[in-house]
Image (tube, rainbow, N blue to C red; front, side, top):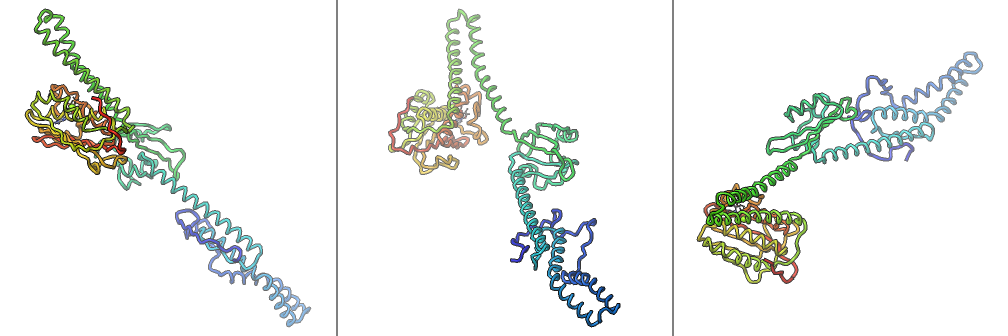
Length: 503
Ligand SMILES: Nc1ncnc2c1ncn2[C@@H]1O[C@H](COP(=O)(O)OP(=O)(O)OP(=O)(O)O)[C@@H](O)[C@H]1O
Ligand SMILES: [Mg+2]
């Protein structure tokens, strides 16, 4: 391979980068002495090199020191010798010149083929090396640019960069998802119409600002908007960075916590004020009324029991939540647990003239779980069914083993399951209430539920226990016909003896 020839064929042609591609020369750069071929230029230099010899021989001929024929012969000899010595170098020099000119237009210029090993070839080789380094640096710069773009796009927060006239110059993926596809060039006020943000942009100091912002549609989302001037300038302009950090989930949690405290206090305060009222009455007007005293004490005992149940439910909920991340692994005899729950609810069911039946095959496999917690699940579901079914109707608990659970089973619980379906014949639940039934203190008819001694925590406990067991709770209800609450629980894999539940 001749020295200085191009060893790679990587072509980076970015007309947008200075000094690349076939961009026309800038008005300040001198016009290239173009048009002439290397050979023509070499011949010109060659002729110039012969000029002194020609002038000398002409002078000698005119002074008659040498015959014209000898002078011609001498000139030819000199021309031939000069040609032999310098033509190849001149052609190389001319190639080198063209290469340098081409390089000034862009780094994709092809390297020249040199004929000699002289200075021109060495210079061409050095220039080729330099061009290779430039290409490498350019490729690295492009890669770094791409990876920065990748990082910018992967940021979970929406980020937009504005120029000093508050027009968007860059927006990452999250920003495009939030505000729409084509953002570049748009004024920020067409994205965010929140006057405090626009005012903060107008009066932006060195330290930036932070504000809370609610985006009302399609579903309300809340953001902490951070507005900061970027250090330095981008393309000669001051730039401003605005990021939108989504705090919807945090605000919702805060609201839930506040609601929970308010609900729990309210639920406790009601029986407590009733207790205080009766104590006052017993001390005062009913002090000597034996019959009233007995009646009031019965009510007080009921209210105290209600408070105790509420506290017990709250404690049990927080205990379950504490362990929710650890999956229980014992084998639970579901049939036995259900039978003991039904037996325990017998007086309640009899009082409402409700017959509770169990349909379960004898060879049911064990469920994987915590016996006491699963008993609590069956207790809540069957008690609800007995409570909310119409008097004189029946409640059925049907247990079956299935190859797979419904969609929504967690990934680590995709095998066979036990389905426990509790069916009642009550008034049913309207569709809009169903997704909210497992929220703490949520009751379709609060007054009625409270009258029945309910705290509104039963289904919340069921949901958390089922989650801990990697199961699913499905609620199906038809107004006027009744409801079916089905719990799907992963089957215990090992052939272990099921643990009896402690009721
Ligand atoms: N089988 C059912 N039929 C109709 N409505 C039901 C049924 N089960 C639950 N609900 C509705 O769901 C609400 C929440 O049930 P949940 O078991 O959480 O609370 P509760 O029964 O009122 O009180 P407790 O904490 O004592 O269980 C109930 O108040 C009731 O409105
Ligand atoms: Mg209940």
